[in-house]
Length: 222
View (cartoon, rainbow, N blue to C red):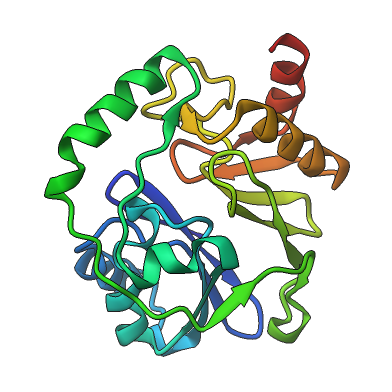
């Protein structure tokens, strides 16, 4: 279930309770509540929040949404400090469009306030099972966009990947490559991990869901 918060796709996964993937940019809590009301979901039914990585457009509303839901937040141990201290990180460009994005991020990042938020569960060993939540899947470490990037892979073949792959602004080529990140080689290696998990559908934070075959095709050409 997609919840669109600004230009970031956040997702609700139903198990014993709901797990929310990412929380959008700062100030997204009103839109979040409106989306829940439209879907007739009680905020208290959301018990867990997975932050795929610590950038402000993914964790900016974490503290507000934690207050609303009472949910516990989890993130990779490498990026706990980013969220708890409200740090703004501008990733490097991986492609020409990303170099432009990196420049713009550095220019405008002083205008962004990332509220500090407490992390309840730090993840460092993978795969991380979701059996306790009765969600048929697992969280895996998929670095590349950031060193602590995480993906949720369901047994059904659906993967929720944050910014490990993109299919919308600022990605215009529709080949899945994130335009900014730490390492294109690590991105490619993490894609291979996903494909080895027999992933069929990719759910990115930016853009529409797309077939994992696009990742296969791109890996053959980059």
